[in-house]
Length: 127
Image (cartoon, rainbow, N blue to C red):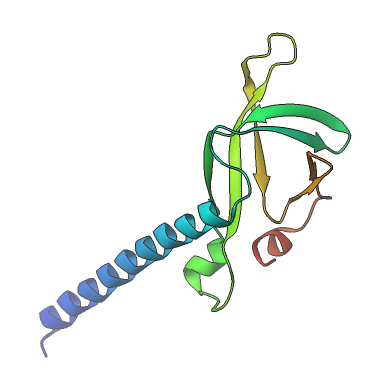
C-alpha cells in the first residue's frame, strides 16, 4: 500500500468516526427527549437555591459529555436537558434571562424543579 493509499484510508476512517459520532448524538438526543419529564411548551417553576422563578421550555435535548465523545462509556444513559426563557415577573412574558434544567442537576419536588447543589464537571457528566 502506497503512502497516498494510506492517507486516503486514514481520511476514510476519520470520516466514518465523524459520521458515527453524529449518529450517536442524534440517537442520544432522541432518547433524552423520550425520558425527559418536561416537554417543549411546558411552563416550569424553578427553585434555584432559594430564588424562585418560572420559565417556558423551548428546547429539550441531551447534555453532551465531552468525555463520552472521546472515549465512549458503554451502558450510560444520556442525561436530558430542558431550557428556555425565564418569565418576567412584572410583565408575565418571556424575558431576557434563560434557565436550564438537567436530569442530574434538578429534582421535581411538590410541583417545583429544585436545583441540586453544585457539582464538579466530572460529577455532572458521569451520573
